[in-house]
Length: 163
Image 1 (cartoon, rainbow, N blue to C red):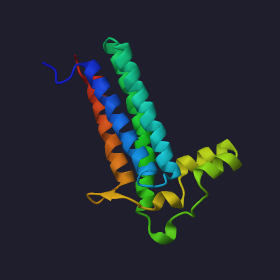
Image 2 (image 1 turned 60 degrees about the vertical axis):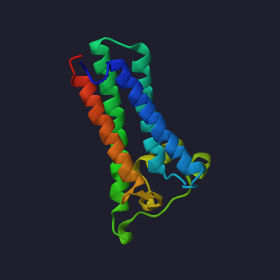
Image 3 (image 1 turned 180 degrees about the horizontal axis):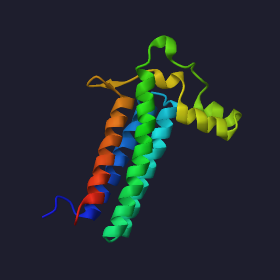
């Protein structure tokens, strides 16, 4: 007997992403931790991964469809892991090598061309190197990398399973 039916797996994945996004919003609005551009990029990829899981849950496709949804989840989670990895890399740079801090994302959206905002969101800036929160010795960026890695592994498992 399978641990989870495919549909249950997609629902669990979607609910996990809701939990991760919920904590991200809690940390922003209750703990008053301002998200950096790379944090916002990661949120986009969490939402995209969760959207693919929700679509798969609602659609309840056959094996080929499950694989396609799983591949879409893996790709979006991989892009999120890349953003989280970049943030972790920035956080571990020596202080003299950290890029300069930029303006807030809200200001950039109001002032700069969208292409420049997008570039900053993908590359990050000095704000992304600042560690404002830790749990068990890992920063939020490191935890995000762990979560994206788990989503990738779960997607691979769903994609390769026979049931």
